Length: 276
Image 1 (cartoon, rainbow, N blue to C red):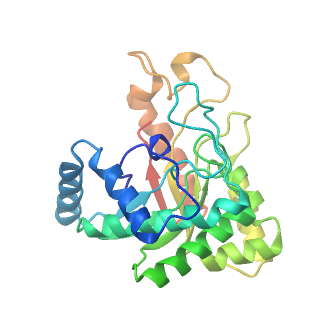
Image 2 (cartoon, rainbow, N blue to C red; image 1 turned 60 degrees about the vertical axis):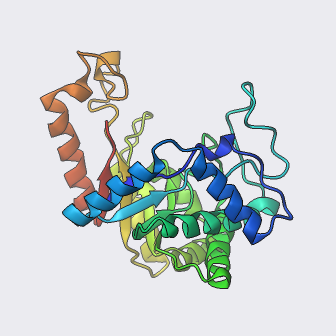
């Protein structure tokens, strides 16, 4: 699986308006694509890699453009944190469908899409579990209305295993999400607080068992930031850069492979490696 995004930094684009028509949303996506340097080359490379290697294309939509009620995010001092309010979910879903329609128009055949990146946090845009469920359902209904074929939907894609639990805490929402997505996705970063992500994965699997479900699981970002939790020095943090950094050493491959195999042993069907 090759996970990628396409287009500009959407938060820096003009705000979406509640009354926008389908044609206006399509035009907003097209205008965003026009500002993306080398977009056609990017598309050509992705299509070529998929054709030559058989890799499946996996689109991540980091966040929508500014939504009604948000400040002007194009300003230099704009707040970095975002929250999707319930009344803006439908507009966001309609934008997502317009974006997927445009991606299909490039000739790329997507296997999967994630409709948000780490919705438990506000560094892209925070989405409450109930609103995330509404987002997925609305994307499906809007795509059907517009005749847009959808790839498989992976979600919710929370930042860590432990942050995935709230999306499945309420039984009604949990069952709704399990019905709405095609694959349950999560991110498999290690926990700076020292929580055992494999134990947290076992707890998540136990919750699914309580619900009588056994969904397909995918880790769509996997990385080992701190290979040894006992040593938090700068050189032992793989997210840092530098000649003496653990992330650039042969040993890091062993640490990463060790934890990756543990995840597969935990019944994860797919894990996509992050660069560090």
